[in-house]
Length: 459
Image 1 (cartoon, rainbow, N blue to C red):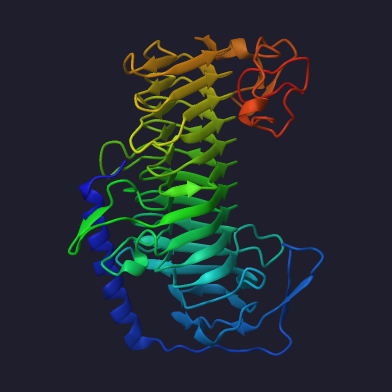
Image 2 (image 1 turned 90 degrees about the horizontal axis):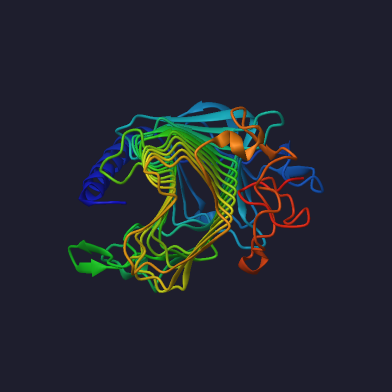
């Protein structure tokens, strides 16, 4: 959750960005080189074995203006160390996105913490940043430093970021949003950020959030010089298969994602180490204005809540492993919540310091808590209701003080498959009507005569 400290950080970031831009403009020109017959292997699409490098971005370049770059072009960035990079006005199409890819090895972008960013897109649409241009290198792009490591803003939309390592940023690791200004083009109803794919990235050692997608103040907006303005919607955001580790605030925070949002398959380790304010030390935050699904994530050692849900009320949270949270395993609060339900199904929550699932969600029509495993909550309460106003359907939850009763193959070693003698097997109820048809390992539910409790289905 955010407070006025965020505004101060934003002012600092803007000042730092201005300082960086003024300095860079004095020393670096803008050139684009078109090589002859330059190709690279494309591991993304085996049916298309090569990608022609339309342009090569030289190490001395600090920006690329894509005004004259055609849709479907490929910008290749040669291996090696370089400074910060700004990509602006790149305009691909849905059928012909512009691809930015590493060539010949790993590329490292480095910027001081006083710089606004290490990698930025400005007014770009339909593009892909792919750090998988060299076989055998998982993270072909490394973004080191900057107040924000990577930022996709200034009306950027319809983009994909994959196989990028982001580290040592002063604030967020990867940020995707355009904060509203007095320019109506940035405000809700005039701009929507769509089709945001962030996957297979490694974000660590950040001063703030690992991933920061969408604005946090969906309902009330932001007060600026021209009055109160509302942030843009985010549609079809998918954040998956990422790793975050040792982030200052949440590992993943998503706000204003009004439809089509999915957060899944991520590993969030040790978030919230240096939060800017109370309540910013959670694992995953499903923020105001955000609906959709959050599933198959592993969240470990969050000082706050493992997952905090402040969403629209069409939120389905399932198949997550939430281990050793410093507060609650899951915390839900209804704020701007026009939807019908918070649904918490088949999660496994182990050793939260407070409650297993804490429901302060008094205004939402229904909370659903089914087939969850809750082990050794510090408060002794598996499911806490703030008051009698909290409406709850709860059934077939397994509650115990000892993790060994679950009989995982190797819990301490991270193997959460069930032994044949586990009491969780066939002890749940059908959750197909909620859209839960597989488990943490993508095993089909049910695999036996009944549905299993917790994030893992016995196979």
